[in-house]
Length: 110
Length: 123
Image (cartoon, rainbow over all chains, first blue to last red; front, top):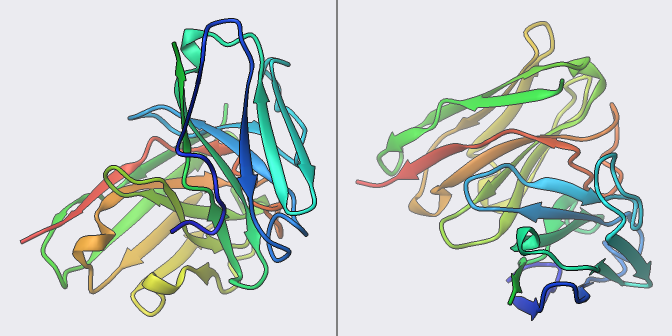
Protein backbone atom coordinates (compact mmCIF):
# COMPACT_ATOMS: atom_id res chain seq x y z
CA UNK A 1 0.00 0.00 0.00
CA UNK A 2 1.66 3.20 -1.19
CA UNK A 3 1.53 6.42 0.82
CA UNK A 4 0.49 8.35 -2.30
CA UNK A 5 -2.51 7.09 -4.29
CA UNK A 6 -2.51 6.91 -8.09
CA UNK A 7 -4.86 5.11 -10.48
CA UNK A 8 -3.28 1.82 -11.63
CA UNK A 9 -3.86 2.55 -15.30
CA UNK A 10 -5.10 5.11 -17.80
CA UNK A 11 -5.52 4.93 -21.55
CA UNK A 12 -6.32 7.19 -24.47
CA UNK A 13 -5.89 7.39 -28.21
CA UNK A 14 -2.94 9.04 -29.95
CA UNK A 15 -3.31 12.82 -30.03
CA UNK A 16 -5.66 12.85 -27.06
CA UNK A 17 -5.05 14.08 -23.50
CA UNK A 18 -4.83 12.22 -20.19
CA UNK A 19 -4.50 13.25 -16.60
CA UNK A 20 -3.04 11.19 -13.76
CA UNK A 21 -3.94 12.02 -10.18
CA UNK A 22 -1.78 11.68 -7.07
CA UNK A 23 -3.51 11.91 -3.72
CA UNK A 24 -1.64 12.35 -0.46
CA UNK A 25 -1.98 14.05 2.89
CA UNK A 26 -0.99 17.14 4.82
CA UNK A 27 2.30 15.51 5.81
CA UNK A 28 3.47 14.99 2.23
CA UNK A 29 1.75 16.49 -0.84
CA UNK A 30 0.09 19.15 1.32
CA UNK A 31 3.38 20.66 2.45
CA UNK A 32 6.02 19.60 -0.05
CA UNK A 33 6.93 19.89 -3.70
CA UNK A 34 5.73 17.04 -5.93
CA UNK A 35 7.75 15.50 -8.75
CA UNK A 36 6.68 13.17 -11.53
CA UNK A 37 8.71 10.41 -13.18
CA UNK A 38 8.38 8.44 -16.39
CA UNK A 39 9.67 4.87 -16.15
CA UNK A 40 10.15 2.35 -18.90
CA UNK A 41 11.10 -1.25 -17.98
CA UNK A 42 14.84 -1.79 -17.82
CA UNK A 43 15.67 1.90 -17.88
CA UNK A 44 16.39 4.63 -15.36
CA UNK A 45 13.36 6.61 -14.16
CA UNK A 46 13.21 10.03 -15.82
CA UNK A 47 12.21 13.25 -14.08
CA UNK A 48 9.51 14.99 -16.14
CA UNK A 49 7.96 17.44 -13.63
CA UNK A 50 9.48 18.97 -10.48
CA UNK A 51 8.40 21.57 -7.95
CA UNK A 52 4.75 20.70 -8.78
CA UNK A 53 4.70 22.25 -12.24
CA UNK A 54 8.18 22.83 -13.67
CA UNK A 55 9.67 20.93 -16.58
CA UNK A 56 13.37 19.99 -16.78
CA UNK A 57 15.25 21.00 -19.86
CA UNK A 58 14.32 18.76 -22.80
CA UNK A 59 10.88 17.76 -21.54
CA UNK A 60 8.24 18.91 -24.05
CA UNK A 61 5.45 21.23 -22.98
CA UNK A 62 2.97 18.45 -23.70
CA UNK A 63 3.72 17.45 -20.10
CA UNK A 64 2.32 19.63 -17.31
CA UNK A 65 1.84 19.42 -13.55
CA UNK A 66 -0.36 21.05 -10.97
CA UNK A 67 -1.08 20.79 -7.26
CA UNK A 68 -3.99 21.77 -5.08
CA UNK A 69 -4.09 21.01 -1.38
CA UNK A 70 -3.16 17.38 -0.86
CA UNK A 71 -3.54 16.31 -4.49
CA UNK A 72 -1.35 16.68 -7.57
CA UNK A 73 -2.05 16.03 -11.22
CA UNK A 74 0.09 15.17 -14.24
CA UNK A 75 -1.31 16.11 -17.64
CA UNK A 76 -0.10 14.83 -20.99
CA UNK A 77 -1.50 16.26 -24.23
CA UNK A 78 -0.97 15.20 -27.82
CA UNK A 79 -0.38 11.58 -26.76
CA UNK A 80 2.21 9.60 -28.68
CA UNK A 81 2.91 5.88 -28.64
CA UNK A 82 6.31 6.72 -27.19
CA UNK A 83 4.57 8.05 -24.07
CA UNK A 84 3.56 4.53 -23.06
CA UNK A 85 5.26 4.01 -19.70
CA UNK A 86 4.63 3.90 -15.98
CA UNK A 87 4.30 7.30 -14.31
CA UNK A 88 5.04 7.92 -10.63
CA UNK A 89 4.50 10.89 -8.35
CA UNK A 90 7.00 11.40 -5.54
CA UNK A 91 7.62 13.70 -2.62
CA UNK A 92 8.86 13.78 0.99
CA UNK A 93 6.70 12.79 3.95
CA UNK A 94 7.43 14.78 7.09
CA UNK A 95 5.65 12.35 9.42
CA UNK A 96 7.51 9.31 8.12
CA UNK A 97 10.70 11.35 7.53
CA UNK A 98 11.05 9.44 4.28
CA UNK A 99 10.68 9.80 0.54
CA UNK A 100 7.38 8.45 -0.77
CA UNK A 101 6.04 7.47 -4.19
CA UNK A 102 2.65 6.69 -5.60
CA UNK A 103 2.00 3.14 -6.71
CA UNK A 104 2.50 4.10 -10.34
CA UNK A 105 0.12 4.51 -13.27
CA UNK A 106 0.52 2.52 -16.47
CA UNK A 107 -0.29 4.67 -19.49
CA UNK A 108 -1.51 2.89 -22.60
CA UNK A 109 -1.80 4.80 -25.86
CA UNK A 110 -4.40 2.84 -27.82
CA UNK B 1 27.49 14.87 -18.62
CA UNK B 2 26.07 13.61 -15.34
CA UNK B 3 26.46 9.86 -14.94
CA UNK B 4 25.62 7.47 -12.12
CA UNK B 5 26.80 3.86 -12.35
CA UNK B 6 25.71 1.25 -9.84
CA UNK B 7 27.52 -2.00 -9.14
CA UNK B 8 27.68 -4.74 -6.54
CA UNK B 9 24.36 -6.44 -7.14
CA UNK B 10 23.98 -10.19 -7.34
CA UNK B 11 22.47 -13.33 -5.85
CA UNK B 12 22.71 -13.74 -2.08
CA UNK B 13 21.14 -16.15 0.39
CA UNK B 14 18.69 -14.93 3.04
CA UNK B 15 20.62 -13.52 5.97
CA UNK B 16 23.56 -12.62 3.76
CA UNK B 17 25.15 -9.26 2.97
CA UNK B 18 25.91 -7.15 -0.09
CA UNK B 19 27.39 -3.73 -0.62
CA UNK B 20 26.15 -1.64 -3.52
CA UNK B 21 28.24 1.18 -4.98
CA UNK B 22 27.25 4.11 -7.17
CA UNK B 23 30.07 5.98 -8.88
CA UNK B 24 29.18 9.53 -9.91
CA UNK B 25 30.75 11.69 -12.60
CA UNK B 26 30.05 14.94 -14.41
CA UNK B 27 29.18 17.01 -11.32
CA UNK B 28 30.50 18.01 -7.90
CA UNK B 29 29.39 14.96 -5.96
CA UNK B 30 29.70 16.50 -2.48
CA UNK B 31 27.22 19.27 -3.42
CA UNK B 32 24.28 16.88 -3.69
CA UNK B 33 21.98 14.78 -1.56
CA UNK B 34 22.06 11.17 -2.80
CA UNK B 35 19.44 8.45 -2.52
CA UNK B 36 18.79 4.77 -3.03
CA UNK B 37 15.45 3.80 -4.56
CA UNK B 38 14.38 0.23 -5.35
CA UNK B 39 11.83 -1.56 -7.48
CA UNK B 40 10.82 -5.09 -6.59
CA UNK B 41 9.68 -7.40 -9.42
CA UNK B 42 6.24 -6.34 -10.62
CA UNK B 43 6.04 -3.54 -8.08
CA UNK B 44 6.43 0.23 -8.07
CA UNK B 45 9.27 2.49 -7.01
CA UNK B 46 10.14 2.51 -3.31
CA UNK B 47 12.47 5.08 -1.75
CA UNK B 48 15.01 3.36 0.53
CA UNK B 49 17.51 5.82 1.97
CA UNK B 50 19.02 9.30 1.71
CA UNK B 51 22.33 10.90 2.71
CA UNK B 52 23.17 14.60 2.70
CA UNK B 53 26.09 16.09 0.82
CA UNK B 54 28.29 16.43 3.90
CA UNK B 55 27.61 12.77 4.80
CA UNK B 56 25.62 13.40 7.95
CA UNK B 57 23.47 10.56 9.22
CA UNK B 58 20.93 9.39 6.67
CA UNK B 59 17.25 8.54 6.60
CA UNK B 60 15.77 5.09 5.95
CA UNK B 61 12.44 3.42 5.36
CA UNK B 62 11.32 1.39 8.37
CA UNK B 63 11.75 -2.11 6.80
CA UNK B 64 15.51 -1.57 6.34
CA UNK B 65 16.36 0.32 9.53
CA UNK B 66 19.04 -1.49 11.48
CA UNK B 67 19.95 -3.66 8.45
CA UNK B 68 21.01 -1.18 5.75
CA UNK B 69 23.58 1.60 6.07
CA UNK B 70 24.02 4.40 3.55
CA UNK B 71 27.38 6.13 3.27
CA UNK B 72 29.44 8.13 0.83
CA UNK B 73 33.09 8.84 0.02
CA UNK B 74 33.16 12.31 -1.45
CA UNK B 75 36.86 11.97 -2.28
CA UNK B 76 35.99 9.05 -4.58
CA UNK B 77 32.62 10.36 -5.82
CA UNK B 78 31.00 7.17 -4.61
CA UNK B 79 27.76 6.35 -2.79
CA UNK B 80 27.36 3.07 -0.92
CA UNK B 81 24.57 0.95 0.49
CA UNK B 82 25.67 -1.77 2.91
CA UNK B 83 22.88 -4.33 3.13
CA UNK B 84 23.00 -6.89 5.95
CA UNK B 85 20.62 -9.64 7.06
CA UNK B 86 18.99 -9.61 3.64
CA UNK B 87 15.47 -10.94 3.21
CA UNK B 88 13.57 -12.24 0.20
CA UNK B 89 11.50 -9.05 0.20
CA UNK B 90 14.68 -7.02 -0.43
CA UNK B 91 14.88 -8.54 -3.92
CA UNK B 92 14.75 -5.58 -6.30
CA UNK B 93 16.57 -3.38 -8.77
CA UNK B 94 18.34 -0.72 -6.72
CA UNK B 95 18.81 2.72 -8.26
CA UNK B 96 20.93 5.58 -7.03
CA UNK B 97 19.41 9.00 -7.59
CA UNK B 98 20.71 12.53 -7.18
CA UNK B 99 18.82 15.43 -5.61
CA UNK B 100 19.48 19.00 -6.73
CA UNK B 101 21.15 20.45 -3.63
CA UNK B 102 23.47 19.67 -0.74
CA UNK B 103 20.87 19.63 2.01
CA UNK B 104 17.43 19.16 0.44
CA UNK B 105 15.57 17.02 -2.05
CA UNK B 106 12.85 19.63 -2.64
CA UNK B 107 10.17 17.06 -1.96
CA UNK B 108 11.75 14.16 -3.80
CA UNK B 109 13.32 15.68 -6.89
CA UNK B 110 15.59 12.96 -8.26
CA UNK B 111 17.04 14.75 -11.23
CA UNK B 112 19.49 12.03 -12.34
CA UNK B 113 19.28 8.27 -11.87
CA UNK B 114 21.55 5.34 -12.55
CA UNK B 115 20.57 2.29 -14.60
CA UNK B 116 20.15 0.12 -11.51
CA UNK B 117 21.71 -2.94 -9.90
CA UNK B 118 19.74 -6.16 -9.43
CA UNK B 119 19.78 -7.73 -5.99
CA UNK B 120 18.26 -11.19 -5.68
CA UNK B 121 17.82 -12.74 -2.23
CA UNK B 122 17.08 -16.43 -2.55
CA UNK B 123 18.24 -19.79 -1.28
